[in-house]
Length: 289
Image 1 (cartoon, rainbow, N blue to C red):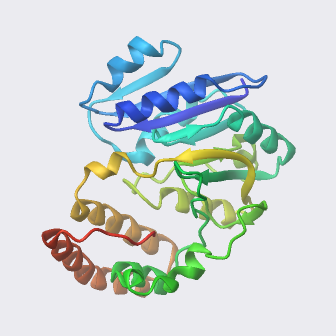
Image 2 (image 1 turned 135 degrees about the vertical axis):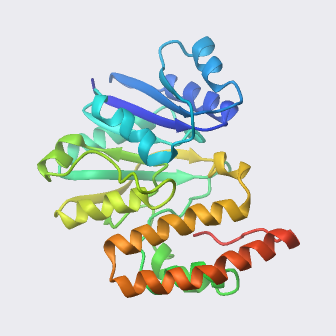
């Protein structure tokens, strides 16, 4: 089989329906499987899959186990030469899958690749990131980019040219193309660190690839529409910030000097307080982090 597509879903039945329709309408000469791991949705997601998409495989979890654990339940059994981790709020074009598959076959050294992501209006979504550093993450914790957006220009790579392919540190986990054979050659396990419930798991995975001398790439040869965060638009800002805080601290504890972890942990007390006040006052988070 050429491609395994794995989708972790949580209470986004309508977006998932459009996602699956677009996948099934893909063009090109290749074989694929679609596997949905549902994290205990209450909106009839499983019934929709059963009734409308009989060829789609699914796993129905009885609790929300997060992104890393959900993917890890399926990754060992994925039959494709390549594996695409796809968010449920994505919508591929008819040529997206064949284009990214062909690109991967032409670039066998690449362990992970991301494509050109656009919003519903066709505008490029800036998703290529440098690996997190203490100063840019402190700025995020303290919400400074709300006032001074330029503070994240280096981290978000504001001048990155999305019309050209390039080797990068990390790409968005919403469209995450993996070459399992390359991962195996790097003597790396094909699994995510389950300490992360949400956020930073794909950054951690890319960091492990880089540590072992592997390559992560961005390519504009394929394009996908990204509706960005539909599942977690259902979650309060405070709860999202707690998920984000937890993952950031785990990432820094694992990859950075301990003193950096401690500094972030201290300043997150202020960050959570700012989020709480913002939620009480109805101020929305506008920063793209």
